[in-house]
Length: 326
Ligand code: ADP
Image (cartoon, rainbow, N blue to C red; front, side):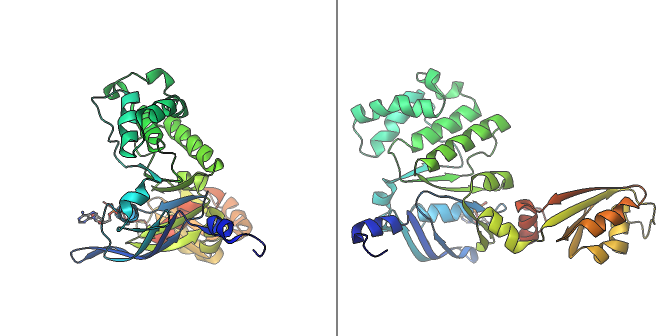
């Protein structure tokens, strides 16, 4: 970048959040075990992982709300936890649980929250109409929090996080517990924010959310990043291109008490698929070219099957396993 003034170059390169070698231990339990992350200005970065992976702890450390056991954090260019309070002035946060004040109206919640950032009442009051409009809550200005639906509360919490016009918005599971309509609206609003240059960091365990929103994502488990990249890059790097799901009855054999698809998979899947696994009643076959397997399946009696491109959920299950988490 020769010819570009240093100050402008530094601004372009500045990361809203940089984490190096982050570790967090609770007693003997290391719940974050060496995480590196560098957000690019204006991107949506998604931390994806099963329950207990360490997503929330990573965010809490980044915000200076939990003291790390090791590593370095720069939030808005400032070291955390040392200068966390100052850094948080540039950041918006949507916590996992809505913590709106139930005694206040929507507008009052925005006003009170804005004061934490040192904004004067006139400035906040001037921003309230646009914040309510962003949340689709213009008609709820004077409504009490108890009267709002779950989706409305979430939208107000999102609007509240924008009261200080942050460069970086951090959201912990923003759509957990919402119905599909409410989820779509939140997604649409987050896209609008990134289009306008806000950097977004969010956690989720929903693959569709990550696939829709993320410019880049990382899959975490047991406090470690297992993979990182754009959704396409991650899928291409981690998994075969095609998946064929096989289920139903198989007339070929019923062996050792196994179900139709399992008996079929044990007899034939290995001949066609690079990798396969049986979960419940379904055999999942992972392969780069599904055509030979499809020809074989067309000749089997009773089996049903579905061919589809590999997706993020396949990668997630491959990397984190199919065992249930608490
Ligand atoms: P995630 O957000 O990915 O579901 P968390 O970061 O909430 O995961 O939790 C990671 C692990 O850290 C979990 O095993 C959780 O029980 C543990 N943990 C989180 N907070 C505390 C705490 N304050 N004390 C002890 N263990 C904790």
